[in-house]
Length: 379
Image (cartoon, helix red, strand yellow):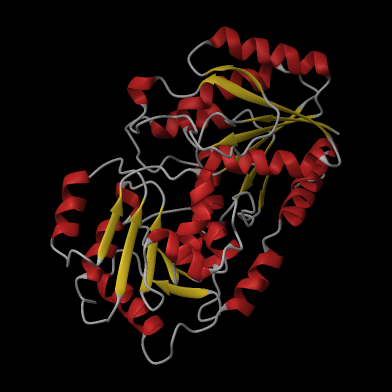
């Protein structure tokens, strides 16, 4: 099958780029693949971070063609014409924000009536929603033939926005793209200047309002009695910087390490392998690549009961579930992990999740879904 991936890839950074790249690698083993990348992703005025580009010394990449300018309709039509001439069987769009809706819609419609368009929805709707978000999402998605979603809850949102849609519910596979994923804990801790017996809780990833970092910091204020407890907040702050810094300043100076920057690929595993447990105190979510990195580095997680996150953990076997925004619940989970028995071994449960959340399985189910769409077999 001739598959075209429409997504950001290297030199752009971030989870969507990493996911699209890893999936393209997987499917290129058995299919003819083209990766259509962006010449311009976000206009600089719309991007809240320091840079859109990956400055890592070890890139996560797949050969791509940088053809899409997000604000130039002429480039969208050129892409569609190129894919029609190539004879693409299916276009796989990576959807996460309605800003890209006009570009994706134009590429899909200009690629020809014989091509099947599928949107992998990392988020059906944006996390931050303006007044026109519903119309914007509908405009971008209503010409797609099918959708791959990563949480059962997303099906309800999709049904509300796109009537009589055809979709498949998949999952976020385990990331296996970062160097040093099997780095021994003691060596990771040496790199970060940690003691062997420190008790380390890691928050990792971009810091935005819906991710609940403030809840984690308030929980930490109730855990000062745990000897050697260290809280690592690692990720570029996109909003609420003053409030986050105020909460950090209210805690003992040696208890919290705040790293307000995007972590390069070659350092990602070090932070995870140095941790005892990874906390995702999200207030809303669909799925998270952070869970996938944690599991690949054999670390349990604390996650909230939002979106599809509960599907990615087995309580007491690969991590803990807590209520979103509930400081007491989060405090209790952290305390339970470090009290009573020393770092309960969840390795067997995590290994089961690794097998369940494989790229092989994801790719096979996605291709089967595309085949069904092409013959009209999906109901």
